[in-house]
Structure formats: C-alpha cells, structure tokens
Length: 330
Image 1 (cartoon, helix red, strand yellow):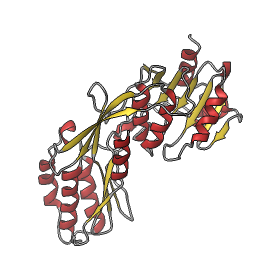
Image 2 (tube, one colour; image 1 turned 45 degrees about the horizontal axis):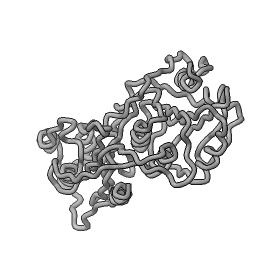
Image 3 (tube, one colour; image 1 turned 180 degrees about the horizontal axis):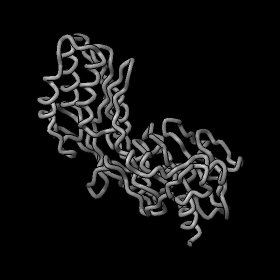
Image 4 (spheres, helix red, strand yellow; image 1 turned 60 degrees about the horizontal axis):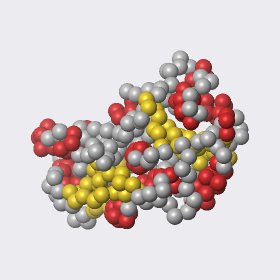
C-alpha cells in the first residue's frame, strides 16, 4: 500500500499557472484543457470531450459576466456525470448529485438514535459504539474525513470480547480520507489481501495511465476475526466506496444494503486564473475482477428500508435488522 500513500499525497497537489489570463475565453479553455488532460473516466463513461467542447465553446462571449461564465462551465462539467468534479467560486459550487437522487434513502439517523442507541452509545473519537441485542457490537461512522486513531480501534475491538459479531454502519458517509478506510479495514484480516488495481494519470492523453496493484496489509496490532457486517447505501461515497471495496474482499465480512455511490477516482485540483478552483477525478480503481468501482461497490445482500410517509413513522431499521439476523444465524 506504500504506492497508494504516494498517490494520495500526489492527488492533493494543486496545479496552477501564474501567467494564465482571466478573460472568459481563457477561463473556459483552462477548464476544458485541465479536464481533458487529467480526467480519468472518459473512456469508461463513453464521453466525447471534443464534442462537448464544440457544443459549449460558442456560448462563451468576451462580455459575459462571472455567473453566466460559471454556469456554462458547470454545464459542460455536468456531462462527466461525476460527483468528484466540482467548480468552486465565491458564489457557487457546481456539482453532480444524480448518483444518489434516484435511489432509496435507506438511512434515518433518528431511528438509530431513538431505537438502537437509546442514549447508551459511547463516542469513541468519531465513532459511535453500542451493544445491540444479544451483545452484538454496532459502530456508526459518519465521515471518513474524521480520523480514527489506533486507540479508538483498540478500544472497540477489545470491548467485543464474546460478542457474536460486529456491524459497521457507513450509510450516508460521504467519504474523506482513503487512509482511514485502509487503516480500519486492516483490523479485519490476518493475511495480505489483493483488493484491486489503481490506474493513475501520468500524461495528457486520455489513455495515459500507470498501474499499481493494491494490497490490504493486516494491522500489526490487535485484529478482529469474528463476523463483520458492513452497512452501505447509495450515499456511501468516495473513501466509503474504497472502504467497501477493501472489506468486500475479506472472508469474514459481508456487505448489506445498497450499492455505494461510487466516487472511485481520487481528485486533482487546479486554481484558475480568476480565483476559481476546479476539481476532477484523476485515477481509476478496478476490483480484482477488473471491474471499476466508479459506479459503486455492490453489497453481498441487498436490503432496503421501506419508504415512510413520515420519518417519525419508522421504529425499525430493516437493513440493520437484516445484519443482526445474519450474525445470529437466522
């Protein structure tokens, strides 16, 4: 995984050109060109980026205002169908949310809080931890952007004792640091496991990538080998998709819920001449079967929560109940 660490650091690099011009045509060209040279999913998504240019370039005028220019550039970027692609200004942030809007909600925190936590959870760093019925451990992790320490994980694993299993809930976890994903997953394997292949942009051509095989190494401290259920839904995105992919390859782990939201490309950034910031996906990740995780990682067992007329009508989390039954062998 050493190569992955280098990748993660490199993807934080911000590209910039101090001599770039600020007029609308130049900004448009800068957005299109940086995307053309760094975006990683043109082929996978069947996107003709030159044709997109031909459709949007005639809309750019020298006298257009900032908001109008922003909207044209955002409309162009929308064709990438990628939640990791954003244009950020002082007045707006372009975004693509279609990856989850047409899927069931499948998670209501108030139900977990009122009917499962019941005020008994421990706050172990960013993790909320409680024992459910039959002494099953349950952890809710809301964001991989919040670091989980070695001590946090040691405390939870040491607490499991004779517990029949552990449920890790990452529904509605929008991502953050893939390093957190790797560190947590390493606690649930006793051997080195091949989890996929990274393809990292290394040139301006759409097919310019270098590849590296990615392995999950077992943590050198305490680990847990009992049954583990990971709960996912469509709003499990970015680093959470990586976590689901890592965990899906472990023998003692079962994924339950919905396919994750995807976000399988780590981003590269560019500060534009006019002060805006552009972010695009610049890597690809394929699972051991050679399938991209950009569309999301599917669960082993599909489960849903019936759509309520009112959130307060819910008193059971059917996805969580499915996980409990699996651990109890029902």
